[in-house]
Image 1 (tube, rainbow over the protein chains, first blue to last red):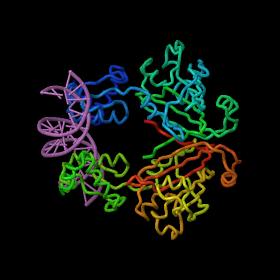
Image 2 (cartoon, rainbow over the protein chains, first blue to last red):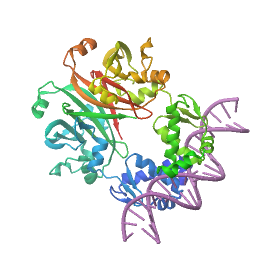
Image 3 (cartoon, protein in one colour):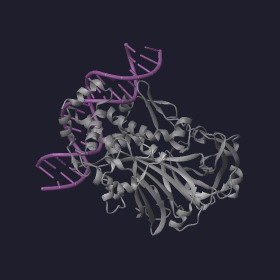
Image 4 (cartoon, rainbow over the protein chains, first blue to last red):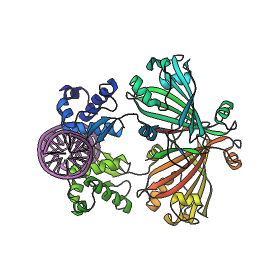
Length: 244
Length: 244
DNA sequence: CAGTGGTCTAGACCACGCC
DNA sequence: GCGTGGTCTAGACCACTGG
């Protein structure tokens, strides 16, 4: 009730940021689930003992970070990892001509391994720690597009071995099965030549230039939870980046 | 004075957006110059006949778009294209190890030409229209990094031929010499092999994988004003992209 | 110290979705 | 019609800057 107001004496941060943190905590703890409607601004304001305007500023900030979705006349909802949003937010490869669409996936292998030095650094775990490694071949409009290797810290994904199938949209899987929300990611791109294996899987010649994309995805607490390395052909598609 | 309030009866857009547009217009017309301080919130509110809160919302939106810089206790300033901001906002190539820094440039050629079909489409001008083409070799920490070709619609850059020198930071040049502010850009990336010419200029072998970056930069009115194609070696540097 | 932007509040009305 | 978020207003106080 007065929890937030009191915290103000300790923290020097603005009230609306404290409100935001306290609301994000509800997402992290799972007391607010994806897809669920949350209390109205007025209710939250009463509950937290602050004005509606302060709650609004916190909710607006969370909406800007794609954590919430507000709909006039309906209410405020916890964002879900549904296809279209994930596609728009996290998938930067688009066909040179035609619609942006979700590529199909075929799992090539899925196994338990020990984290390499690079993987450990990216995921902030110890070298040699258990990780799940999934390799997938992805196609866009029937044409082979890329090979990606997803590395997950096994500690964060208990019961992974019990999965019978890995869906196309893994971010929804993380959310539904482990309550892990991907809140952001950072990618590093390089140009490399196709390896023998790349060439065999994608049906191109070895040495062909490819985009090498290394993505680290973060959860709501800004902790890394997924490392994804993609090698992508760019004859028919390109990577888009908007600078604003 | 009551101009904005009246416009409200015609436009159906929120008042703060109309205020924002009217303020952006001052930037476009140049009545507010980069680096200049603008009137205080209270003064603008009085002048436009709206409340301080509405002006604030407009100013906050413009600040979020990097058009203004607000400093508590000082005032609100028109953003300038200075090194550090441009570097952070528009330069996505960073060394694999070490600080992000502005690459040096050496002009290889600078000439008048006729717009190709692709250039014309990107710049929204007619095919064959006059364009200035500048080719530069850029190095990061002494090592050759990329070759870029900048294409400018000659109509927007009168007197370009009189330039004795092309500075490293061309966005500042556009601003100071032609009053053109680059407000955003969108980039398309592909992987390609180095051409013979690329290889000669950059000191690599032909066919080496390179990042091919095609950038269209927009002015304050969201009109394209610059096309820039870069071919970049990624042995020592990479392209970063944050997904939030 | 005065003036600026930053925060917080309270209340009014509008636009929208749903019953 | 009612409840939601969206806009707009007015006023208070805080935090920071510079003279």
